[in-house]
Length: 379
Length: 120
Image (cartoon, rainbow over all chains, first blue to last red; front, side, top):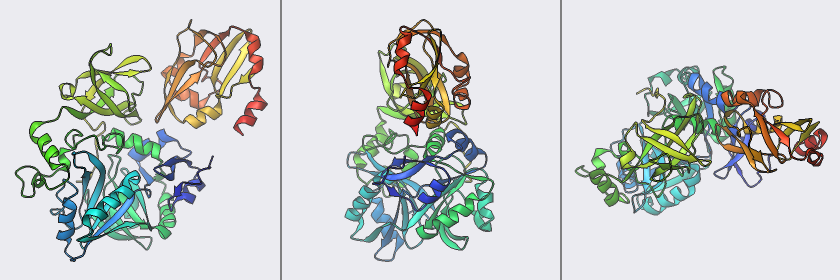
């Protein structure tokens, strides 16, 4: 069962095993896909109490300006992302995208302004490529480091604030996307109020050596339960959040992916720092001209999940192709199947009925507004 | 007569009719089931054909027909409540009843001790 000898382990590996996790290979790491409670209970517990996730496989990167001026790091990074980094205040974080020359997406990431440096969190499967990309393009003005000695956990759900407040009272003052440094059990941590579940919650970067102890102590709280990758996926899908490699990749542009909100006005045509990122011609043209397809939510009408890779048709006989499902599964909080995918613009408005081919049958789906749940971010 | 397959199905055979389901081991490995698709009564299958589909939160899996035969009954209860397969896989969570084309072919399947060895 545990013949994953070539896989890397996170600093919390032994803790997962002691908790009875089922470990699976994911992005080169042995990761917990579920604990004995199972995906369904883990998902629902996160939405009703607080779930704790190990996301230490993700890349944590610092970008330090050689000049000492954070503005120089921000402007340098703006050459790689269509994001307003310069306008990001100290102690604030925002979502971003690395784009390529054809306007596709190399990775999605979080960018935080930590005062004298930028702190990034990138996807596990992309972190080596992202790091090489940043080294190649930012080294003239910045020192880029892929941190090897830190764990990352997420505490998500309506009780997350109360749980953390027992360790650090000021947590209640944080707003969605704030980033601070604070001591948890006397260990200096970097805490952001963010996550990947649609719930209020926190992502906590902890020195690797201290991570098992801090994590174990948070898990001792009766309102907290460990959550595996299985529920992480169903939670983010209900929240309408993209999974890199499924819903966005080098073949999708930010506008096609309905991520216009991630490109702030200053980087769009007419903005003071318009363009100047890879694929700007294509991406800015997408903003002005529209795109031929768009990422949308999809709600299957029956009980059968309609999963990634399923072809969508405009008719129940499979004659007129309309798009493709990129992520799909069962949403425990929705209590039914949920999905997202790309459809031709003609079929992109909410309420449009489509058909997905599953095991030789054409199952009805309706284009739905994302997310499928109501997020509880503390804005 | 209780038999098992290496695809993690059980068969309880009486008078040439096999009640078929998935084993406790299979149900545990699949995790919480959210959808079950069963064959139509009257359908005929050969051994190894996909005769049912189960879906967990994460993935779909096929259930293969363990022997040649004709479906004579299906368990609508697990379609209405797939969690029955998780809570009672070798009882109330049965899938279908199969009228065997050749009841003697069951002798080629695993008995309980051989199956337990397989999953040990």
